[in-house]
Length: 467
Image 1 (tube, rainbow, N blue to C red):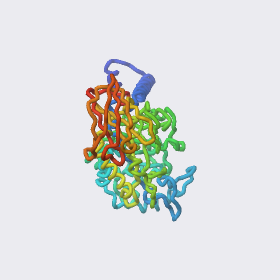
Image 2 (image 1 turned 90 degrees about the vertical axis):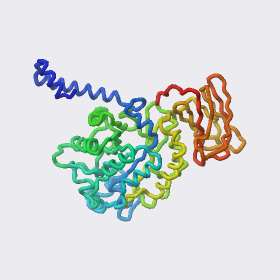
Image 3 (image 1 turned 135 degrees about the horizontal axis):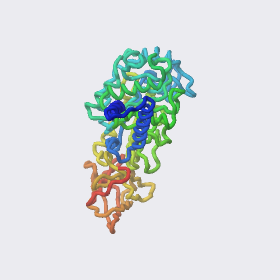
Image 4 (image 1 turned 60 degrees about the vertical axis):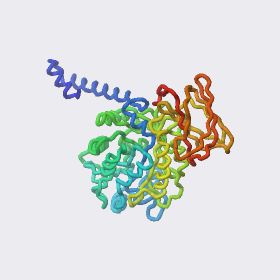
């Protein structure tokens, strides 16, 4: 019941409240709603987060005015990180924002941007959702907003709503669309419409546009909680306010931990470790976000040669999944609006592996009942779903050398290679009560990245706490 309808109800019931009493009643009701929403935050076993937990693999896109520069400005660079080229170091501006707005914004015209191609590539990789920078720290809106002319439609030759085109294409191809929004804004004081008396109102108006004008938005990804320059505060109260506001706009939206106190807090619905793998299974749901290059550049860097290998990225995806989290791979599109060819090559390789093995990734949970033999020449992770456990073997000992996996689960039925193109599985099993010991050798034909062995058991096990 809204506050208005609740007031009408009270009037009809014959209540006679003074204005002061009514104000107190509304405040109490508001606080109660906020507390209830805040206490309901989580992404462990709730229905609201099921799509996210099942997805496992996502895409991140850092695209904005900074993409025009590729990490270089007036012959100097590369500036690191490239997406923060306007204000690096202690936020001393490499580029004064007026110059950034006119010179860089005046040149931004990524004519090769094609939402269909982007989303098709994301889908090809097996990524189920995309996080895209609707507004980064430079305050520039990559969507058409009524809050400021400092946006991609009104201030660039490109003059197209990138966010709308991507949101529409994601919907057509069945990919979950999730905008990224920077809480800290380096330019808001100089660009927001005068009708907004403070940054709170300006920010909330932009968030309302994103949540109501671009179709279904199942998740919002906040960032830059550490630099808010008096605009906002990274404290519990502000975290609650922002979280409640987003859930009011969309009761089912997921909100990351950077809505308030950040990555070491329990704010929001889940954790977002950046460019680092979690060392063990976590009690809180998490999403590792990682650059496609071996550094901390999220925006495109012209001439970069340090792209991570497909082997490392597939391992990271398996690692995160086996520990009960998601893995998100970033790309920084070029000034012309295209994914770098190195990233496309990675997507093609990952996508081919996922074509054969996605059953062992999507919708799975950790399998702590599996204990692997500790040997340097044998690297194995485990996931599970329904009747099955999946062993992901990244490297094998030499031919003829065996390794064991112990599973505290009985009623083993059979094992098979998940990828039908592989052959020659060498597996022996030994059952003793509620335990199964498997002895494995390298198959005749193994996968160069990760060989997945599907183990079928007679009965499904009860859901794990992180399911």
